[in-house]
Length: 179
View 1 (cartoon, helix red, strand yellow):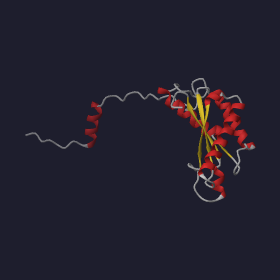
View 2: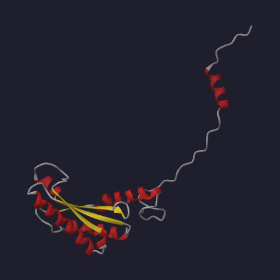
View 3: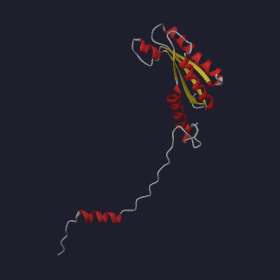
View 4: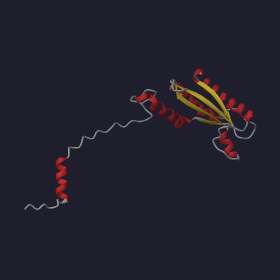
């Protein structure tokens, strides 16, 4: 008579290990800087699969590093010294990245009528557009749009909120990608 004994855990592991196939070699993907191409320059549409990541990463870089927003004093469209500094960086970026276009969105605080704020937002967007064109960006690459008080950055009724809502925002997108 044959008596079967329960296999020990060690015996079971040895059996499984003998049947296992060798592990595939580990291949590490190269580290990719999302803001630079192989030549060290900024990404352009088409640099990565489908071009979408390249365009999105480049626009994100514009927003975070160049600066996409300038602020205005109450009821004003004149560019401050700080705004001109931001816009000079935007102009340089746009001149370097010729496959991107821009829409300048004008905004206003919540005080005043809807009509007044739409007109004020339009004048702010135009002031930014004119400055960028004067810095050498092609006029065919910049459009303007006014939201007036309809899209506030902050919602409350004090001067700090109002100051953040008096702005123009430059939104860049790759040419031919819905711009």
